[in-house]
Length: 401
Image 1 (cartoon, rainbow, N blue to C red):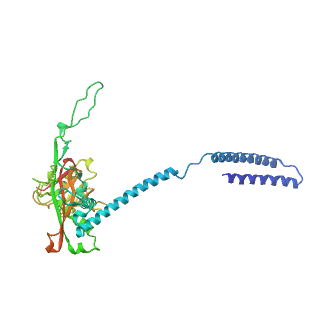
Image 2 (image 1 turned 45 degrees about the horizontal axis):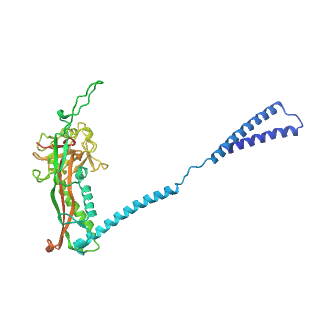
Image 3 (image 1 turned 60 degrees about the vertical axis):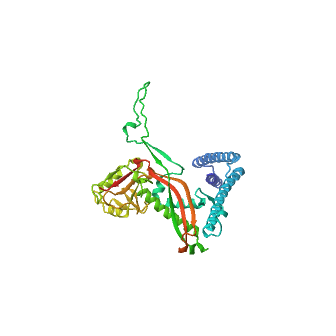
């Protein structure tokens, strides 16, 4: 702004000099118009000088004020460096621990070091527990089995009792009502009408690993064992959650679910029944809800249309499992029963209503002699878990007639 004002002031002064020089060259007095223009120029130059003076005063005042620090103080720099250093140190220590466990476990599998000479701790059953290896297996199991990953998980020993409050019970409902000043409120206490208990059932995953692979130093035997163990454990757990093999005595899983509807037919599902199953879950539990069914059931639902002739099941690459039904992801599992008389063929809802409990970490043991005649070693992963439905309001099932 000051540059523009300076240029304007100089132009005005130049114009004033031209007027005065012209009158002087013609040896005459200033005309009335020239005198008036010079008076205007004088006033304008005065105003411009005042503005320039104000700008200069403000600039000096701002220069006198202490400038805010753009660079962090030295102590702040040191604090940030220390925090970053601690974080990097923890990450390096974790990576070093994982690498140490990996090397020890690899040596244990390859039989290049005795079990007693490893730095791996032991569990109650004597099996080796490489903590970081077990964590990798568990994380991979969760990735492979979304039902387990979405469930309410408990990692405790002994029996776990979970209280259950049924909002649908009118006798136990907590009520809110209008009241008058200085009058007592009526007491309505919600009670836990029932409880579910989780204990623990021992299970083992046995995989065979080729001795040729074990002896191949170029082959990543640890990751291979993690992949095999994770795949076997995930398949087993998913089956026990969705279609328990012995629900009367062991893991109940989804067989404990009581909320649901029954189809009119034993061999076909209608669009109306799918909508009813969807709406049997309250809206507050819909945000994380998913569908679970077999591949054949999904194929049957692909043919269903609404009243406008639109297919209910839509392919959606942005959905978690690549397809949506009434706006919710569809997960397909081979462990779900096919459409047949009396079978529960669809589960729907928020699987936080399913409780899963692991009583101990995965213990791994190598069997060197059992499969010697097959030129292989066995690797067993022991774990203890239980599962049941802890909240029937979050889940629903469709059972064929």
